[in-house]
Length: 290
Ligand code: HEM
Image (cartoon, rainbow, N blue to C red; front, side, top):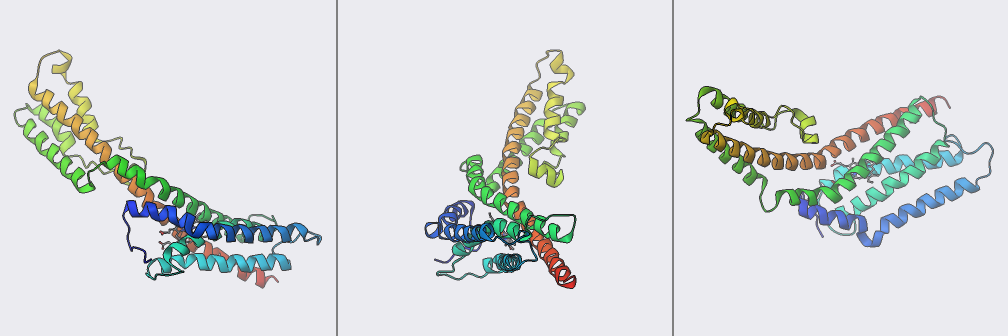
């Protein structure tokens, strides 16, 4: 079955379930078998000192590891070519995840547990970081789409933004009869960029300088409120600001979840290239000092 080029969150999620369980966990079994054999040979290899990267066993594990890493990297190319059948994208992704995890065993046994402040250990650390980010990606694919649809309910992102614009128009109208100082409070919200604050704000969902929050606080602390005078116009502004605050909360949560889905690949891929660069240096250094 051909895979979709850019699936929606819902399709993504079913893809996720199936690529992990694909063909009765075939790639999990293969990865476990490879790891088990590698561990078994290491355990029964009674050469002294214990095999490290420079032993026959170490070279074998190193070669398998490098080939595996190069193959795992090719998922980026494979993802962009749609072909059906046995080597469908689902099979590739399933193999990618489980064989990628088996690198923890292959890579660690290759090192012979010899670590230091050098390019060899750097390559190892980068490999573990790529694997770690991969695990994060799988967990994100498992949880984020559900959280996204739970937060959105039946509405789309476009409808959420439309709703926000409508509240802004109502706020604008409600500010017309207000005296200057109170209209300034409304402007605090209207002139604020509700999604400004950069990547950190987007990922954490925290917008400490949020104009709407500040405006709401200013309305509640306004002297006319403190004195207990009735003020219908300001009451209406407060209701609208509260409505805007909760609409913003929902959209920001939506953007945060979407960013989490996107951002991990922005980490996984550059780390992969850093890993390949470190691997090249590692291999050249090994043969240079041979
Ligand atoms: C050293 C090992 C690894 C390397 C070099 C590697 C490299 C890559 C590359 C190049 C991509 C393609 C990204 C793109 O162009 O969109 C990718 C995607 C991915 N990787 Fe890895 N990866 C490794 C290990 C892992 C592990 C251990 C896991 C999970 C436990 C994992 C999970 C994923 C997932 C879920 C995707 C996205 C698939 C999709 O978008 O359909 N990776 N990886």
